[in-house]
Length: 629
Ligand SMILES: Nc1ncnc2c1ncn2[C@@H]1O[C@H](COP(=O)(O)OP(=O)(O)OP(=O)(O)O)[C@@H](O)[C@H]1O
Image (cartoon, rainbow, N blue to C red; front, side, top):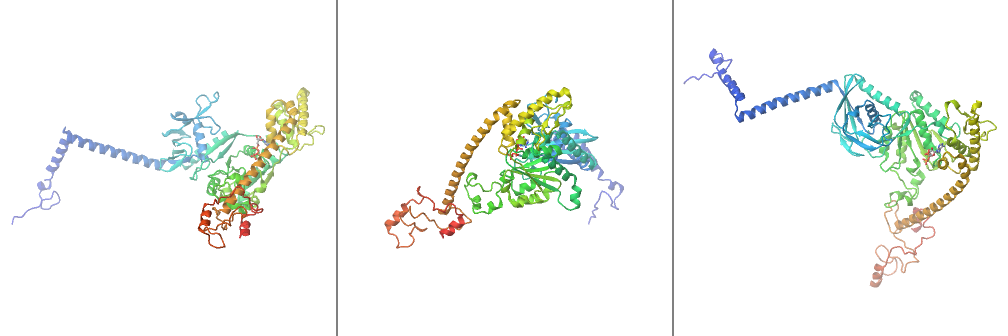
């Protein structure tokens, strides 16, 4: 048998040196093959060459990207700011100040509104009063240097009001989102950036009061307050109330904001609730705006009557109100009936289909429940130094639970204008603008016609003889104000109504005084007519409600809570005793075929002459049912 020697390229003890390297020619052969491959001009080799080169380039690119990503993760941090969150406004405003948006090449152009101040201006800011605003919409990242750091900004496009977009991380975001990457290892860099943005935003906002509202339903926690409005800050002195009322309110709120530690140390939730109640147009909202301007607070205002506001939305909205701000619910009584109404005999009407508001004045109009609101006022969302304000025209419609201390700590009552208020309003309208040189004094001199007024009346009293003319004018104006106010009956017209009248005779105080009597008469006449119309409308609504009630009661409609007895048509109108559910006349012998035929043709809808029994309409349904049984 021939011994066959198996040769291995290396490591075989039997192998000789020539055997050890015998594989080399093969390799050399390969390399020559490789050389041939590289230098070959055959199309097959060219494609393969490209393939390999492409793979090498792609691998290199991926490695670079991976390295960059590693670098980003290691040496940078990215913060996300979602539209609807206050921090988004700070950042956008700050970036605007840095002039970043100027490099943008894509804009959304809107007619100018007071909504935002950060749209860029097309020309020099001082000279131009733009009628349109140009809001950048680009998505391309921008890099800029701030405070020694490199920052990269990327802003996702807004898909339009209420529409959603996807951020680079695949999360769905309604509205716009800004991503800011800071290339630094210092966590403080991000903190410094956000703080600078916030401070600059607050500085710029000082002359305005910023009001956030929620006008679209969003189910993402960050996106509740989607609308921002600005109002000119209103001086406290422009609010005409009994002396000291506004000042004491401001003092109270300021004290509350300054004593956070006191609350924390005693384990008392740091929140304070105010209810401003009184007739429409008496200055409730104006007081809140003036207070917010004075204390530099932003207002987060929510209408509970909005269809999309339910308990859970309310909870989220309150928890995203930042510290040291005002959470405002205007016309809180509109949201739900008082507990008595809600549990009253007609409360089930709220669930009946087809019953609209005009016919059911006590029916719930909001998805917010009383317990939901109470939880929000009590709960975590409402501490943290937030001031809760509510306004109402009808305090007696509010549930006592809502009014207890701890929820509402101070109630301030507003009333229709008194004569003092009318005089003060008159002077506010017609007094000369004051110059620092002729600072007016609050005069309550005994001889002045308004001396007994409890309201601060601004009358310019000149001590300098050169100002005697001003003094004369002021005296004359004081007399006019006196005549004007004494003509106006106290507590009949609201301050807003008087303001409306005075606006019509701007710069003509004498005319205002002359015309006030006929204005009062006209107003009274208008009111009478309005009241008559309103009474007629209410009567009609009541009648319709009664008819609907009867419809549900008599014909076994969808009145769920009541076990309503079978139909009981009125006996007098019916030619026969009413057929029961199976079509047979109750009691008596079974009907003949003729009778059955007659009964089946009979119209069972209420006859036009049908009138309810005397107590049927007014009795609560439960009692009516019992009576019928
Ligand atoms: N006491 C007041 N002092 C100064 N201005 C007032 C006063 N009351 C009303 N006004 C003026 O009347 C207008 C309406 O006032 P405001 O909205 O504050 O009333 P309101 O009590 O909140 O009314 P509503 O209950 O209808 O919301 C404002 O322009 C405000 O300037």
